[in-house]
Length: 439
Image 1 (cartoon, rainbow, N blue to C red):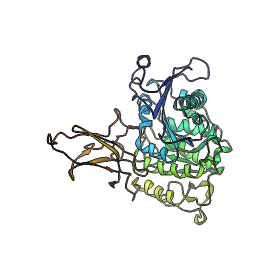
Image 2: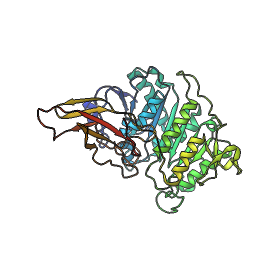
Image 3: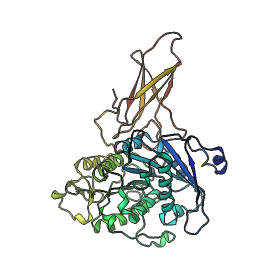
Image 4: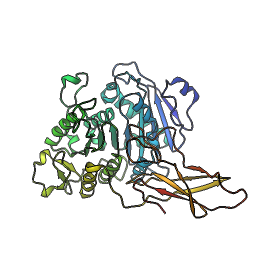
């Protein structure tokens, strides 16, 4: 597979070579970079074209890791991967830990077999690692090829991220499996899916299984009813061997991602804080277990491990008290609380009657909207209404696989009621998804 490197904008020749709906990816310029590989016809290599977009924090000297946001199966989910690296909330997590944020987009046709990419043994493992090396060269961060991975995956993306964890446990800091897990035992109903083997190293990787309750927990029929039995089998097999694995059932959803990011991001934050080495190239730190909490499977209460009276070989594993409290809120109603305001916006610029600014998302609760003040009075909110059919309204909107809506929303406001020739003073205020305001 020959890489196509894109530094400033998408090349027109590349756009012509792509098949809709994969020819409308957001253009990239530093700190964003993209590579694209054509499909291969060689046995064992990836049969789909694929593009990888990465965001690199502008002030980082040496990357400590890469956070991978992996979409699920189907043409719509694959297309949605094109905006994953532009997500301000996930960027806040990456920024905190000096990590890159990478989002693949496999150019799968609607009726094609997604196992040909979501099983990493079918060429996507090799393509992914090649992309890390090529993007490292393009961005001036060659360490991208060797740093650890924090993996998040939805549906088939969970199958991929879980498979990568079993194959490369020494590279994986933590993995969040939203509605998808690797298959460990042969299933006559899913005979086309190859099984994986539990590796010894994967037992030390923090793992969270995150199905929706309507995927076989409380709703036993329908298209996604088999998700929970697969999650339960994976959890049971891994936990019986001592794996650091938990289960957080989304109490409101089926296969859509809902409000999972408000637990997934803090959980990954805790794991990255504990495991990332200070120096690129050094091995991952072992995950501490002395502060762990446990819960019964499908319960909504957790206890410190020392106080837990049940069978620990069957218990949900949680890394610490703070995560256990957020987990309890999430599995009850998904309303994870937050008491800290978001960072204030920065770099406001007024040209004529147009106001632009930059902003970082609140690590715990993301961004819901911005308030625009003129001369001390709020005159507008941006956007007027946050869009998210799957959970809390959010500034960038959300697609099915937890990525920003396209086209991307801009931090921009045009004041159409400003008086011509009169000087005005403007302020911009960030509001997170629990309603807290910045300075």
